[in-house]
Length: 208
Image 1 (cartoon, rainbow, N blue to C red):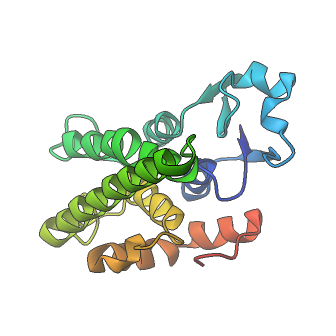
Image 2: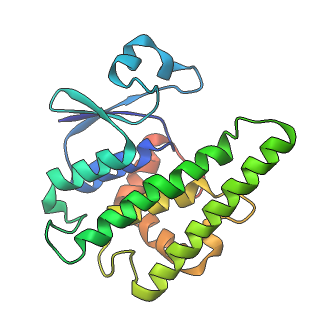
Image 3: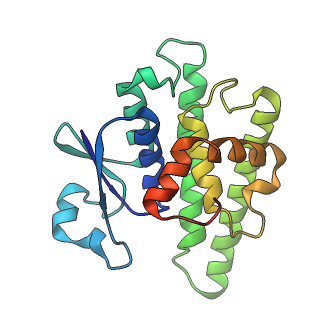
């Protein structure tokens, strides 16, 4: 049994998707970010960063979205959402997971929270947009060369992660779905039962 502390549509979405894909028993505990519940001392004892997701694994709190995704795929190999260790695709799987975690996801934080004002904010936003769109260029090229999924023929954690991040771009001047291969990938992932179930549970409607 896992316990996921989440907020609808946030980075916890990837972990929630994986729990649904895997079919692992779990319970959800919503963290009201608008009310500041992430700064509650009880929550900070679980996640000192005051962010979501937090996943209780074997009674212990764990955090960091990409780390939780890697962990769940490793603990549940029967779901076949990651290439097995020592397989030819394993290196590319790890490469793309860390690329999304280290290059693309942080750029969204700059986009949503520039932590600057006036001209400085404009510079931060422009830089974030360039980095995000450069990532879409790279991911779209990967799909064109070796699709239909980012690792080839099978859907993996990488595709779920990328689609969550694509969703975050839906209100940007140039959303990810303007890249044709990415739009096709998003359609495939959104058609999966896990995505539709998550939307129902989390009460999401945008980008359905």
